[in-house]
Length: 341
Picture 1: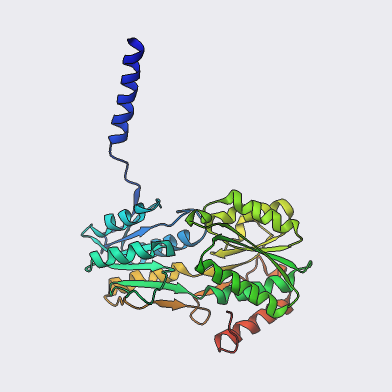
Picture 2: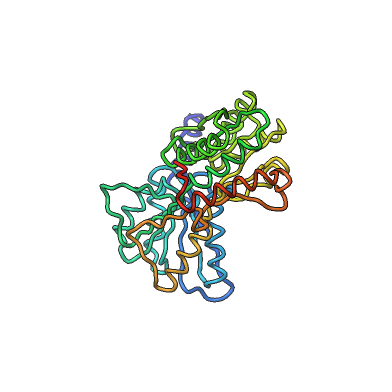
């Protein structure tokens, strides 16, 4: 009887705990003075601290908090319906005027929520365009010409490779990440037709962006096949690529943000997408009343929306003639003489 009573009590405790309200995962960043309005940000897989597009989006809005006296509320990523719930949670707040979804996985949910809250402004980074679906007038898709920056780092990798083999590690096998891969391969083969490119993906779902163990496994395989430079487009999975680079003392190329500190002396460059600048300007537009949705904002080399890192820390890794060749390719892409895809 005592054992039965103890078991009942244990089950009761578990039931009560499961019914208790979940702790709100959102966090607030406030300006030093009063706030003009609040901006909401929902992170994608990997969340804050991914040293990639999530951190870039946060950095841009954090700057907007200081410069435009805004309040920022951000929510860490969840699975499936959690994204939509987070967007709705922010949109339901009267003081929130702009809600940002950080990643293409938000496309369907943010479109639906934007239609349900026509008085709010929305922006989605890497929104997936669909010709059968109209973009709501209060939603701004922010797109980047990843293939242009990837073409340049592909050329750079091929021109600096000593083995004639380079690698690519993608996160989720998806149309967006395929743009990175194709641009990278095309750039490499444009300058060195005989270059060999090893390719691997971490997964078929969003979790492919949050699997450093798989990233390291893929990179070690590619380094083992004689690759001496690996470019990753894989979010937090890229942490594993940098681990492998340090272990094998070979080069890696970062993505989205300058990732040179992830493997000091071994990050050849990073293909940066200036997500921070894009969301900063969207926040400015909402504040100034100049926000325009319904059509995508597409940023490439000509708009300084993508680029590659060349600074005092990595210029010793890039010979002057290689730098000159890559800059020549940049000019050709901008003037339309060269198509990365």
